[in-house]
Amino acid sequence: MNRYLPLISLCSLLSLASCQKKEEKKEELVEFMVTSPLKRDTTITKEYVSQIHSFRHIELRAQQRGYIQNVFVDEGQFVRQGQLMFQIMPKLYEAELKKAQAEVNFAGIEYQNTKKLADNKIVAPNELAMVGAKLDKAKAEATLAQTHLEFTKIKAPFSGIMDHFQVRLGSLVDEGDLLTTLSDNSKMWVYFNVPEAEYLDYKTHQQNNQVHVNLVMANNELFAYPGVVQTIEADFNNQTGNIAFRATFPNPKGLLRHGETGNVRMTVPLKNALIIPQKATFEVLEKKYVYVVDKNNVIRSREITIAAEMPHIFVVQSGLKKDDRILLEGLRQVKENEKIHAKFMQPESVIAHLGLYAE
Image (tube, rainbow, N blue to C red; front, side):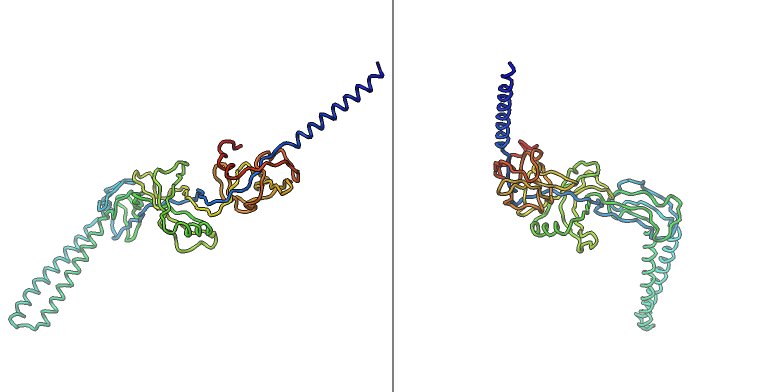
């Protein structure tokens, strides 16, 4: 019985060795899908932090000194152009106007009497001219008094929404004191800063077309009405390297208010962009890497810089060339400097089907 044991052990070892060889052979035949970056013109959507301003936003200030006699509006109220908002006590200015009008009447009578004498050649023409100048001066003073009286009525220069009051009924105000602010929110000016490189792309590719943008509000909802980029400021900020863009958004429902914040979404064109699948990358210490497969099918990791991110794909800024081959799948199954059995897939086919089998 014992003499058969070595024979059985030998057969077992041979069988185990045979299985290991088959397993190694099987492992060697595992194919890893490999592709290349796709080079093409494309567009990406970028977000920029923005400040929202009213189309017209002004401070209403007192133009005369006096007590606030009446307040005809309320905070947050919509007022129409020409609507009376505040009344400064007008008694003093009414009295000044009456005095000026009396001076006009006196000068007018004096002028008529002098004119009759001049017509009869009793007085010299120069005396008539002096009396006429006196009448003109009286009329000018009356106009000035009328203007001062009108300044006691503060009216809305345009239709808009009032902010909170800086004065109350009975407050004593001096000339130039702030009463409130008024905002015309019929359309909004949204300012956002764009880096120099993106500004150059914008001017190169969009110089003859209006660029439409969208606004993401502070609650992460998309504003219902798209805007148009209409203005770019003259100078770059040397500290940040940015330049301010201004987009105009319609605001028919009055949802947007002066001073809000949000994010502007703008479509940016990219010429000859290198596009790779997101799943072909891995991250180490917040840096992006890919496995590059050389001509001998040996893989080596390489750091890349991402210019933009879209669903399932990255736009590569640096680190890869169009002819580089990169590992598409099985990134966790391989090791640095390992030789693999590669199966190449055309990048057009890979990108076209990313949504179907993206990891």
